[in-house]
Image 1 (cartoon, rainbow, N blue to C red):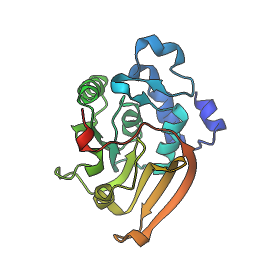
Image 2: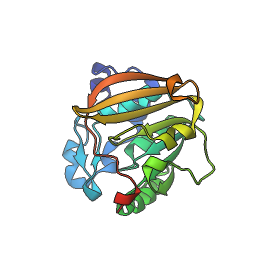
Image 3: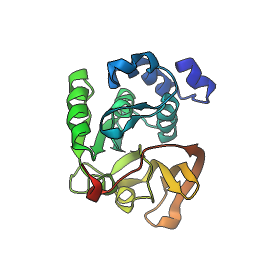
Length: 206
């Protein structure tokens, strides 16, 4: 899998090492083990998916995570992306809106030794009421309708957000560098089309 990721343009050695060291099959149903290391999304609980390995690797690479950085993840899902970031040395704070998925994934991450702080809540609001921020990095693992203001407010000046943004034609991966508090000081880079489950607000939580 790692060699296939290199062929797809993943060249951050910290990302590749983490992808090599975190077994993807731990995060899926055992009935799907045959497909665990193929570059494809797979179904998990609550009608959600675990992203393609190449998508996890690309988002991780775009974040440019350094050991000790505080990373806010929106969409815990299977826990695979959080585990990769933890393995890279990040302090990971992850928000999940689906209670069934949250309960299962939080317990599994703890059992596997991935010290990720997991929270049940509305990803559009981040961790507004919890005093862990501001964050060095924010990663969104679901397709957002807009750039959430609350998440940008919780990101440090100089920090990076990686987010798939919906528009009328599909989803595009963005990397936003917060060079100042005002929106006109956000530097936006675009990295092509991707496909994620939609990001839902608190009114749609299960």
